[in-house]
Length: 260
Image (cartoon, rainbow, N blue to C red):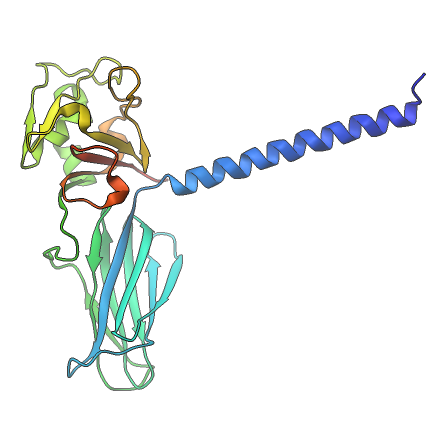
């Protein structure tokens, strides 16, 4: 007959093992959720007033919504590049010895965007700060991708057939939609028959917060069709996008869900 003490130890050991497995699965899930986010990048060049590059400058990128910061250092060519930033509003501060601090405010990052923020430093004390409102419309010249973004304000003001966000993809240049008169708002009953630049509609890739949401194994179709009210941004990468989005030969449609 098994002794009571051994039974207690055995049950305790099994409970500890179960808790360890659950904790491991939790960390794995959190890691997947952290990766499955739509992000963007900020890059730029740090120079002085004469146009000479400034290496080893400290670049601090701060989210105005959460207060979290990322710090980078300009290289010998004066360049810096900070990737994998969540979408939202930011400020960019650049510090270098012998120069006034440079700060750009109202820097808005859209989904999958690459935004350039160049800093021109002025000679002076580090305690002094030159602040620039970076709200001017910029021409994107750092990547060759052809893309269009529809922000949250535009999404709420646009009427979509059946309140289906798929309709938003037809607004970009190069899109040719063969959608029904009424496009149901559910994933199962909706149609995603949109061709971009003459490519097959089945070759498009639909993503939500960084994860693919297109069912390839059942003849195509969205796995999840979010409400327009839940979308923070909607971007269509029509062509020439980077290899990280190379799962299909058509367009890549990225939907970002609102936070909070």
